[in-house]
Image (cartoon, rainbow, N blue to C red; front, side, top):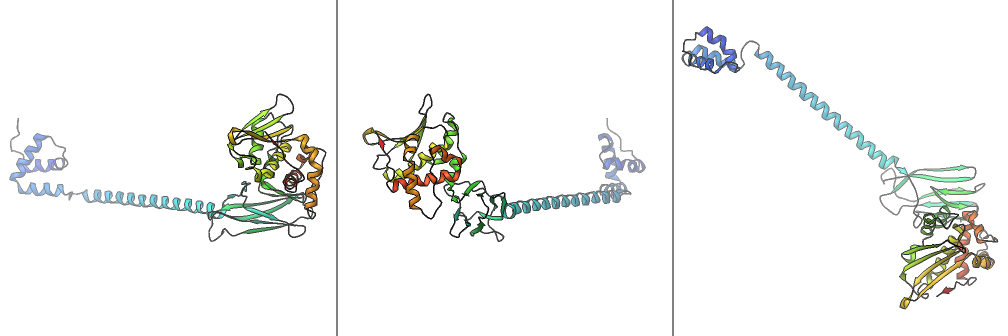
Length: 359
């Protein structure tokens, strides 16, 4: 059914707003369009309505434009807030990396990045340095509490504020019992402490049956210098023995240059493991011929007078190494252990102690 083209101009003008907005039915649209095709006045009105040039339309357009402006301003504020947040975070990260840093921990006993000197009487001079261009130190602090001096600093990235140049600390030793750098003991009772012996001393354990603790002592002593090894413990009956069985091949002649070093480590290990009686370093030589270095508490106790005497005579200007009845007594202080460690090396060097090879 179709509508006749009998709509008056008044009816069409009433329908046009709905027609323009697409709210009229298809049959009505057809009737309105037939009228518009014959009526120029109504067609002009439809065109004006379509362009929103009718009463109320300008206000609606203004409202839409205002909302768009509000949205644009809101987006700008959000972008500015994000940019400010990113800038603040970047400044915070830069301050952390270049100004604040983190506590410096000199825990590399093979290369501690510091050196201590006692060239000036009653004074300990410590030089700190950085081997890497990406590390600098700042905020140096030296405290003395009951004769225990601690030196600390913070590690940062190099910048115009802090560079990688050397830093010196000069510590007067009047009334000082110990000097620590971070968590390392560097001086005790007149004796310079090597980082390796400090590490061994801190790893001490009273029982050879505690395999993880024994492993920490062995690792601290640096036995891996001669290659990979397996660790064997004999704890079923005394004498309690620790055996390090090396997979690398060495002959006694090939190990001669390292004999002093390995016996130093063996002596320190006997001290650091409370009830250890013997230590063996076993090697595989030519033609699968096995051989070992063995050091026992009994043997070391007998040799102590010669070992200590040779060391003290060699270093008359240094503090004497004490002579105790048992090598185990050197575990009472890090200074004593360090002196025994050095005395062991010099006793072999000077011929006061001759290590034996066991086949």
